[in-house]
Length: 369
Image (cartoon, rainbow, N blue to C red):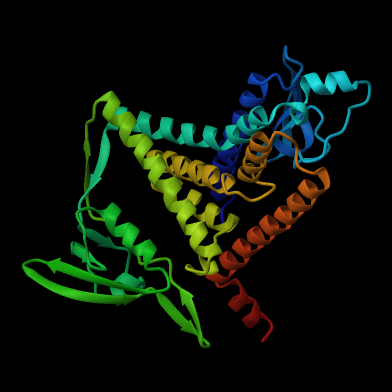
């Protein structure tokens, strides 16, 4: 694996995380909260500069995202507060997010995810204004002879007329049916030349009695053209695209949480690495679009009502706003600890699934045979 493959991954991760943290910083400053540090990356500081507001802007050794430290935060989760040495209770009341009103803390927490959404909209809007909006037909290209699509009988140039009973006019609607069919059967009505025939594809495989979803069919749109839109049409289209992606991601995560979709669909950092590398190989515009996609996914995940994520903080702030008093601090600390354990477990599950999908455990098993 070439070292150059890591560059798109690092760029993508840094950009979307920095945008997220900038959203928190802007919202915090708007509510008169002092931000002590804004770091690009983690670990030892390489460069540092203090701005007029007193915020230290850092470039750190490990370029894997970034963070913002607000005044009074005792830890990275911003759950516990502490009075920094040399400051008073009055300083805390004036500069700490912990002492702000619930609706102000809600805005600060929501600032990160909404910055990701706005950033994604700006990317798609800019591309739409410059190039136009890509419109795909229902004809497909098959990835290769080793793909599930080829093994199932699909060929280059086939037009997908229906999928699971739904009429397919473009590749976008087809892709949605593919995603909805993970772990199930994908039923297609296909046109090749003048002939129409049906294809049923199992989007799963049986491994030692266990049903394992298949997430890669191996198809892409055959052709597309750019359609020029007006400024307002481009903006509306970009907003709709980000909204639909957000809704799709949240629905998928809720399906996984309720058991309606297999937890094997959870991806991790290796999946992001592969997507960033593949998109970069397909060209600059493809990579920029992938940044918009991952930015939207990051925003959607952070809006989930799980303590330690921004969405969990938003819910707590909303409850305190409604009841007119703060929740018990010990209770909040306990649920945030539980949320941290849950999120860490989810990340571990994503890495496990990634390693399973790339046959790492099979390789490991063969290594010791």
